[in-house]
Image 1 (cartoon, rainbow, N blue to C red):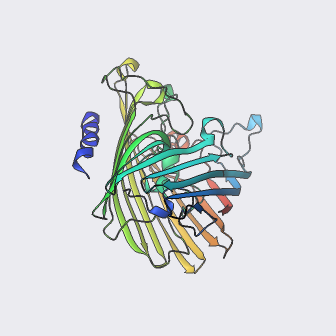
Image 2 (image 1 turned 90 degrees about the vertical axis):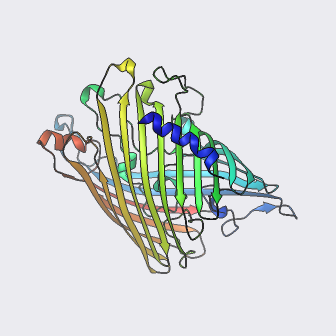
Image 3 (image 1 turned 30 degrees about the vertical axis):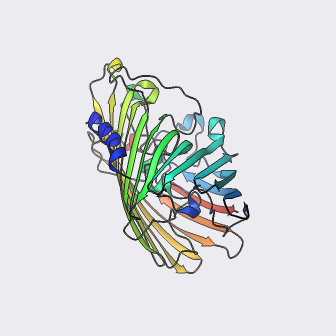
Length: 403
């Protein structure tokens, strides 16, 4: 199955004929079109340079149930609460000579190699074929590919960000379904103004590693990298990378996407992880709708001498509606089979919130509450283990400023 997916991803390159990223948000952080902040350009507009900044400050409350807490060590149900700075991004982006786009951003709120959030160059050979190389978002998941700061809720779906549960003897292997930022090269384009594609090869080590650390696969004798591809259908033009904006209350667009990737010898060369994703997004007037379903298959390398494989799946459905020109109400249902398809039970995580966009000052206020529920487990132990490390009740209030 994994070899078939890899061959299919490679085959996409010659079969498909500038970028499916919308021009004014292709850096993934702020607009390049001049609606926010300022930009510098030559008289002929053949060179555009735009500095930008995005800061998020948040207050968070997380309440955990008693499972996993040791009262003898005075562990409290209320933990990981207080104030935080999720992102403090400073960067610049631009275009040169109608063919080259570039972006560099530093996230001062991160640590280690993750401080370098993005660093890439994009060369458009023609409208239907461009090459991007550097550090950027991997082509998987509508939630991650949405412009930073324009997500419906301040916290991404847990089904994408939480590590899966493996048997206790294998706890060193804890992949998550979302892939996020990585280093690599990607071919992408837009065909007939409605078909988008992204096909890339990445390190597979995520945002926390900026160096080349991979080797050849002992099992398959190919580079142990992340091979990823995404196809989208956008019949009414490029779908904006936003989940709701007061500047886009008259849109009528929708998108259907299919993605797949294979991370060869991930998790310290111990597993081969295959992911599949299906996504839908729509903007129609004041309404935004989004939905995703994804699946991950984890198999061990021969050196691990483990014959068992594990399958995980999850997804979410979310929607937002502007009840006033600058007030958006939001709701999400998140589903996660975190303990694997071989065991009964799953997590269901409903969430509600709102977004308020202040007029003429680029401030955005977000608030949300999420409940983590557990359903269908065979034993109480399975039920207790399934949500370890996850808050049963969580609340977030976030204020964001960008230019």
